[in-house]
Image (cartoon, rainbow, N blue to C red; front, side):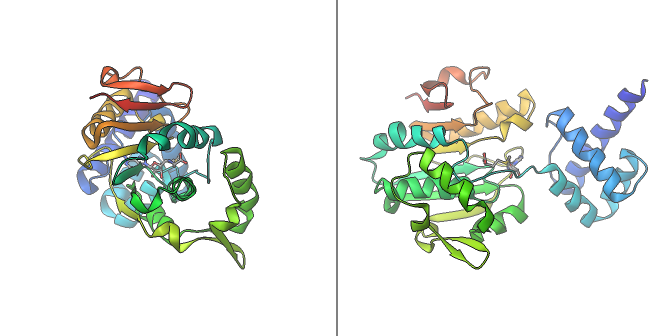
Length: 274
Ligand SMILES: C[S@@+](CC[C@H](N)C(=O)[O-])C[C@H]1O[C@@H](n2cnc3c(N)ncnc32)[C@H](O)[C@@H]1O
């Protein structure tokens, strides 16, 4: 066996151990990115190899938690990819005008900025009171931060620029307030939101959603896991419900593609067919 093949085997065994011992399933994540992260953790833990890390993870739950944190990439921002939010405001929200109740699921919501951006659009479109927004992630640490809705004040300039680029109609300070060195989400925006743990690799569908937003998550998954997740979304959407992916993600290569029509190819927005 080549050293590379042995390392691949060590990686597979580490993920098998993490899954069997703790239920976290990284077995079908993209190998290149997962390998980079694991090697960083090998260094951080001061162990000699991936196999040594496996031993530590099996016997020390705190080490397993640290590895899970390392494998969870939480980069996000308010109104990330502003043209996406502009498209949502211009194309998707008008189709929800007559719905009595609107359920929106942000899968892989990280620290919540994406969900709160959507909440702001909904407030400005006069739809928020009829909405329920669910933010899920497997990482419980980021969910705690999402629930708090407190972000560094230093991000406000970028947030505000994105908000206006997304077509925001007032000022972001209407929705977020400065408090010492933090920006705090207005409590009004939290009223209809719920954050909860959910693992896309192992958990079941989430019923009757009008819209599912899952951006910059599938990119870390191999095709087989992407298929599972898109199947999960299909089961979780009402007929005519919208599925929104990230700018580097597509439905077109999925076996479920024919169950959706394209609302915006460039913005990766799809509608579940009847
Ligand atoms: C890069 S962030 C994307 C955040 C946000 N959707 C955005 O686009 O700005 C990816 C998130 O997906 C979460 N994630 C990765 N694998 C997951 C899984 N199997 N189940 C649920 N969440 C997952 C990570 O914990 C992380 O918070």
